Each structure stands twice: as structure tokens, then as C-alpha cells.
Length: 241
Ligand SMILES: [Zn+2]
Image (cartoon, rainbow, N blue to C red; front, side, top):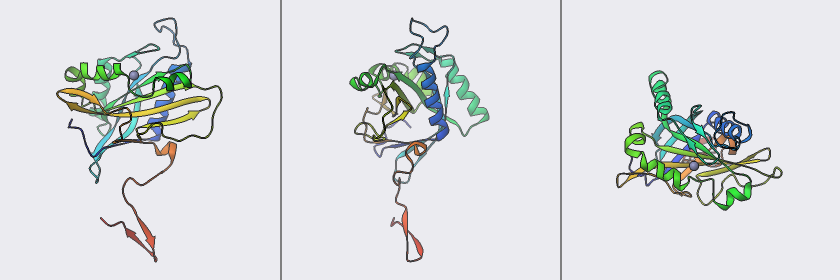
């Protein structure tokens, strides 16, 4: 279960999950939160769980199909961290397992808010932080492993002076980080798969070439995930196996 899949990973984001990730991150960024700790009550991080299915593809890659992203309302939010509640995660996971078992708990998401584009780019803020990696390992055996935590997403938000048009959907060398704009907000979503090494819980690398994040609602159908075939001389021919 927790051996690293050397064939790689494909993470497919549903439109529903994509919208939830975007709205939760934008709200935490732009809307003042009453009762928030610290003097800054905006530009906060948000946190939630992600649910869906886990299967293996014909090419041996692990597929995570993300159906739903759900914000934890009890998480303690600050501008540079977010403290989740283990109780909330366990409760919601149990409720889904009992009543909606097709929505398997896959992992979590949290956001990284930045003052502007330069700041986010300077520290490559759209990847998991050292703190995020340390947290996974610190609570690996006591919490995450028992939950079957398999996937972490980071949603990064930075406002721009004005909306910009042309850019690639992917940022970085790997395919695990998607970038897009909503008005004059730049957003990135990056995916990190989880494996165990030397009894430690680990995320895949920041620009891991083995991890692909696919969000067809955003990018359209950009390429084939397996060979399809073609229609020729009045008949459809499957690709050679
Ligand atoms: Zn983080």
C-alpha cells in the first residue's frame, strides 16, 4: 500500500473538487475572518479533506480520482499555517465510510497565501513546505498511516496587478503543478503522493516527474492517458496492445 509506485501516479481532479478547492482558498485569502488569531485576519491558509477513488491503471500507474474536496470549518487558520483537527478528519472520514463508501478518504489539501506573484515565485511557494513534509512524518505512525492518507494537495493564491492571459497550464518541470488565473488571482494546485520509506511517511518530490495532475475541467482533454486507436477505412481500429 505504501510502497512508492515507480510506474508513477495520475491524479484526476473532478470539476466539483476543483471548484471547492478554488472557493475555499479564495475565501480564506480575501474575506476577513472574525475571531482569527493574530492581527492579520485575511490572507489565511485553509484546510480540508479530499475524497474519491484509488485504482491501478493498465500501465501500472496509481490513479487517484478526486471527487470531492471539503473544507474543515474547525481548522485554526493563520497567515502562515493552519492547524487541523484530528477529530474532524476522523469524524468526516467515518461518516463517508458508513454512508457514502464510494468516497474514500484520500488525503488533504491546504492553501498557501502570498502577497503577490513575485513573493510566491521567489520561494517556490506552490509546493509543500519543509514544515508540511516534517508534519507528515512526525504524525505518520500515530495518525496519518492509520487513516490511509495517500495524497496531499497544495493550493497557492497570489493576487496580480492585472489579469494576464497567455501561459502554460503547467508550472515547473513536472506535471504535478497546474497554474491558472481567476480574475487577477493567480492560483496553482500541486499534487504530492505519499509513500513510506525507512518507516517514514514521505511526499513525492516538488517537481516529481512521476506525478501527473489532470484537471480536464480546466485544461480540456490535452492528451491520451493510454493509446486509443483511430478510425480508418470505415472502421475503428484499436491501438496495438
Ligand atoms: Zn503548506
